Length: 61
Image 1 (cartoon, rainbow, N blue to C red):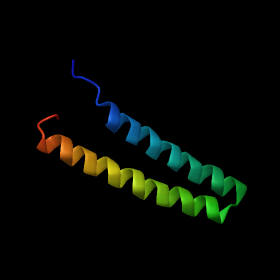
Image 2: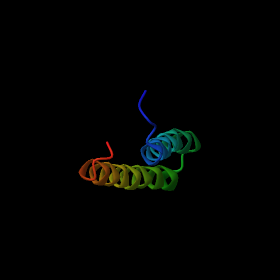
Image 3: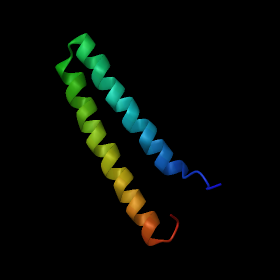
Image 4: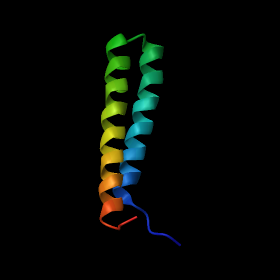
C-alpha cells in the first residue's frame, strides 16, 4: 500500500472546498464570492502542481 502524500491531499481538499464555495456563492448570488473562489482555485491548483513537481524532482513520488 502506498503512503498518503499529505500536502497533496490538503491541496485537493482545498480545491474541492473552493469549487463548493462557487456553488454556494452562486446560490447566494454573490459575484464577489464567485470571483474569490475562482481565484482561490487557481492559487491552490498552482501551488499543488508546483509542490508535485518539486516532490517528483526530489524522488518523493
